[in-house]
Amino acid sequence: MTDDTDDPAELIGEVGHELRSPLTSVLGYAQLLGAQELTEEQRRCVEAIERGGRRLLRTVNELLVSAELSVGKAGPAGRRDGWKQVDLTEQARRCRDEFAPASRAAGVSLTVTASEPVPVSGEPELLAQALESLLSQAMRATPRGGTVSVRVGLREGAPREAVVEVVDTGAGLGPEELGLLDERLRRAGSDGVPRAFGVGLGLPVVRAVVEVHGGALDVDSAPGEGTRVTVTLPAGSPPSSSAGARPAR
Image: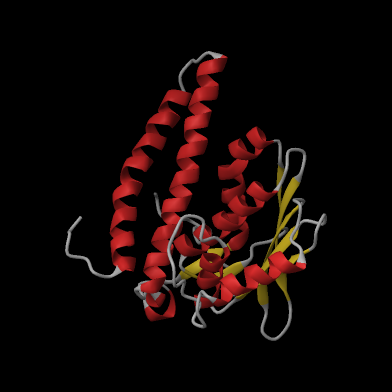
């Protein structure tokens, strides 16, 4: 990493890449170790390493997304020529599988409901990161015995829209908390690009990704009733069998 980077976004991007490589290696070795014959205590330790590593990797990826959006390397101003057809149903199922160990450990039921491919045009890595961020927040908000539900579908109309809903059975947000959340989203900027960096940027990052893909994000919540986050995106043509694939991380 160079030491002459003046732009905070570029600096964070460089730091993020420096962190991601060793984290990926740690996760790879943990998976290899988990495939061995282990005692119950050893397996619990390996699973804890994997859960912690994946959680930290998601945070690093979130920072990288923020940096890319801020310096214009993602979305219409950046890599739109490289956009692909992405199946949101496939991405949701991949995320469910990735979060399965964490949901079991937390005692939270994680379900995905989708009856058909839901194609959109976009950057697979950014869309996957947005969905992972939504799931991560929903999991953190949901107590043991609760449920996180992901629903993916198409809304017919002119234009046709792809819809992703992430619903949790957590404590929910009151009017004051929703107001603070709205203010935080507004601070992200009218162009959807986050203006501040830090751990747990959450919904501002998700909204930024959604808006550079021509979509919108809505939050519906009430105390004791959980939270529903709805993402709508312009629907695309049916994807090929490889369309939902994500680059290796």
